[in-house]
Length: 392
Figure 1 (tube, one colour):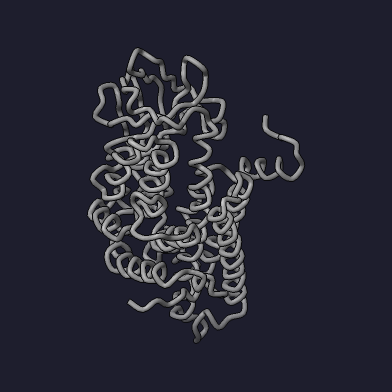
Figure 2 (figure 1 turned 45 degrees about the vertical axis):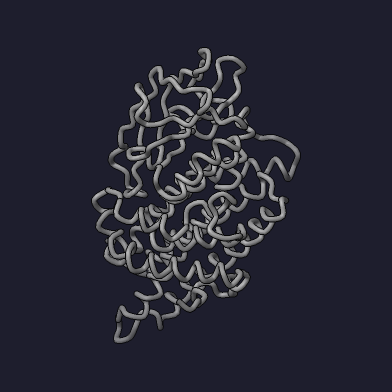
């Protein structure tokens, strides 16, 4: 399919992609529009995940793009950001499924696994033969995960015994493995473990009542004397700094996904403004509506520019924690502002999912918080600016 830049990409940043990357985006766009978009509102309302789309997401080559063992072709971090944007502009829950499978589960093994672990698990996760989850956040530990993990891993000969609990773990109700992060009883450092979900003592329970990312199957996980062999400990995950290396990669892609949510809401609002007639003409011809659309497009354009630069820095090995933190904090704040303006454009129709904006409006709240709240990312950047840590 011929590639066309999005109308919401006002400055044409997509033209920075290679021809092969553009072709991939074009094919992915067709799949998402034809197979995914028609079902998302139904499943969002039911708070169920459409498992029938998983095979297609993997078939397109969307999973595993960041690692040589599984990438369909050589590609850039900017391109992978655009993939995250494309997914999120259709639905944030679908983007989150890919983010968990690709960036967190596969990414944790790709960054922290041994060569043998990478060779065994990355192709299985990329193909969809194995579905993964990522267990870091706990009921009493979110922003303070670097120091506050209460899940304990105790060495027992050639095995480790895990005890503790996790919360808000995406994909965890149907994953085959979950990467569990736990504090070692021996040295107090955070370690990572590939835990098959069939292991005795492992239990995942779906979190009910969510009003954001309703399709994502988040779970509470309990670990009661879960025995994991040393061969399933991530061999290059020895401190939280290694965990942070995984999050540094995914945080930038969450920033791109936030732009995608803003784009999805904006595109729906533009369409509505041309079709909705009030006072005898389309509401898009009114100055106040155009003002909201222009402000929304400004937020989107600024966010794409910031994300493009931070991804270029990643490709060059220049990206640091504060760079991805600023991208996440800025884009999610602008996303939140943009989806509110788009909801305003739709008036009363902005609170029903028929027009899509209500779904983007609700889902934006989850992206605003996960992968580091705005406040925590602000403190990371503030420490870089001043040289002074303001963490408690």
